[in-house]
Image 1 (cartoon, rainbow, N blue to C red):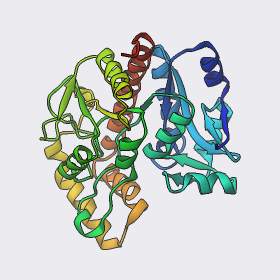
Image 2: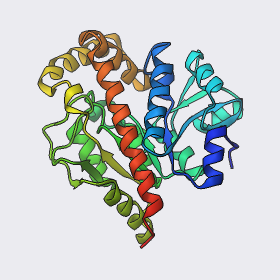
Image 3: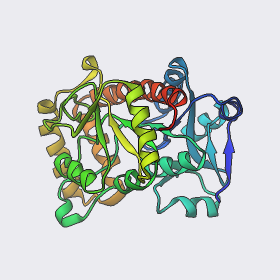
Image 4: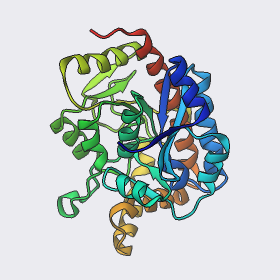
Length: 305
């Protein structure tokens, strides 16, 4: 089994039985510049604590899976360069080589499950990229949701993706897609993707019960909770659509492919929205952290069927 080490706060939570919420680390190393990346990571962790749970930011450092980063390690990761972006395919290699790696949704789910953490808060999941019928560019996040039993709280799939195909793929893989508090599927920066959500739940308790019921039924995989960005922070989908199309065209013209696509598109949309997309991203991650903490608390209070 890969080496797991725990930060001080996470270790104390495990010992006392306090609810834990896993947090990814690519948003720190690949999603934002210094020092905003550190400030955002600290703010998201603070949201989890304020909502009654304990944050466990996950990364690979010093040849180990780190579950919960103490303050010096969080800053070291935020300042680090040449950090590997880890999914299922890269995780073991990064550990074997003793390199530093930031975990995507898929890798964070794997590590959280190894650490016994059932709930994970992120910004948005990966999915089916536009033009995937020719590029076959589909995120490993979708397969991970189908195989690893972690409840993932996100603001839907990233809006730069082909959302109808992503939803179809999740249905094919048997992943529950649950909109929180509304019937429409949210689309990351926007509350409404124009697609109806397959499922709806209005309470953290119901989400926790569904998590436990899947285990009782012997169903593999997790569940995706699509939590809409707060209304005050959203960017309307009709505003974003032409900007996303422009960024996609520029990426294609520049030959951007594979793992480089998402960071490139997010950076271009940041520029095209004059920073609004980053502000929205921070708001939605903090919102997801609050809901994930509520689900983690509810899991403690919800007995297995």
